[in-house]
Image (cartoon, rainbow, N blue to C red; front, side, top):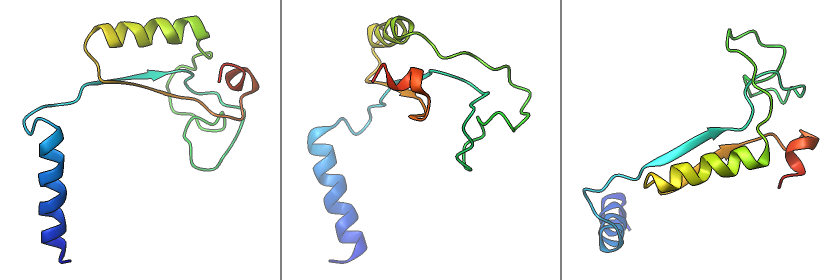
Length: 94
């Protein structure tokens, strides 16, 4: 199948299930910012980088749930959050 035909087919299927003029709103929650003790080699959050951004301790599970519910109540479609699995305190909260 040629690329343009594939694109047309994918677009047609997508429009059958989604508003072509709609916009998805999402909320991004930063669970922890900066000062990560791990250095995975690709993330600028590692403590060895000096970015000028203040470090933020990891949020409690209650705070993450509160912020997620607040975003959901504002009509957000998705609540996105990030964490490093290497942080034992983050991994406990699943």
